[in-house]
Image 1 (cartoon, rainbow, N blue to C red):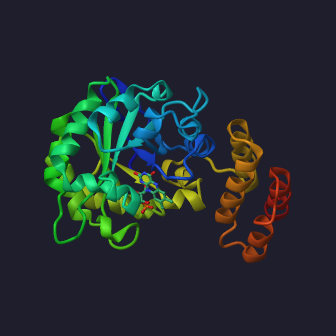
Image 2 (cartoon, helix red, strand yellow; image 1 turned 120 degrees about the horizontal axis):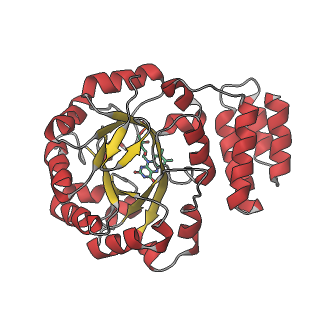
Length: 312
Ligand SMILES: Cc1cc2nc3c(=O)[nH]c(=O)nc-3n(C[C@H](O)[C@H](O)[C@H](O)COP(=O)(O)O)c2cc1C
């Protein structure tokens, strides 16, 4: 696909291929892996602004980063403008110059709280949140969906409002909230957002190959693409999209395991890397049997032994 840098004020992002925020997955190790494979910008998973306010331990772990990872964006969710601003100003977000606001999450618990995709129904509040967050001095970006249902797209008006409130970039997920992660990606809606604003627009939804990325860019005129689920099965999709050299699955797995251990305890590392190995083994011969064995492992060493058996 056509690569280009993205500029947010004085901040330059190497290229226009982004790793999406993925709750439960886009931790330090996974982001660092994808960055190494060429992703221009990676996002943390969504972090609760209220959780930061009340000092939840877990949010601090979600926000671990270091110089090895380089430029990275943190994503927050919430509905109270002041709490959202306080989150942007929180010490835990200090290493993140870019803060993205989640306005697309369809999970019932989040939606019912007036957070995530619920903000699509309250554009005034959404605007207020962005205005307040901008006061923190961070580069504020917004990731949103094209509406709640396909009979009422909100894309053009919402995109304009976000830009007007001070957002430096928007990512448009071309599906409605009621479709969760399935179904058609509405290219025309993303194209409307692109036509409506001057800030960079990143298109998201359904990129599983270089051909998909090209189609998404051609059909929408967007400035870049954001990849989500494809990266879970195949982090080296970023090599495919950016022309970086690939490496073996085993090398990839060993790196990810090492970096996960650097930040997380043995229990978390075991559970997380079991899940990742199960993604990576998909499509391999004997995948079902390997998965069964993986899920009975009790330590990173045991997982690594199976990974070596599969991929060495
Ligand atoms: C397991 C999972 C977790 C997700 N977590 C987040 C999240 O924390 N924040 C967010 O904005 N979107 C989240 N999303 C949505 C993705 O970022 C993306 O918008 C969506 O999956 C569509 O892209 P895709 O078709 O490339 O998968 C999540 C999606 C999945 C499948």
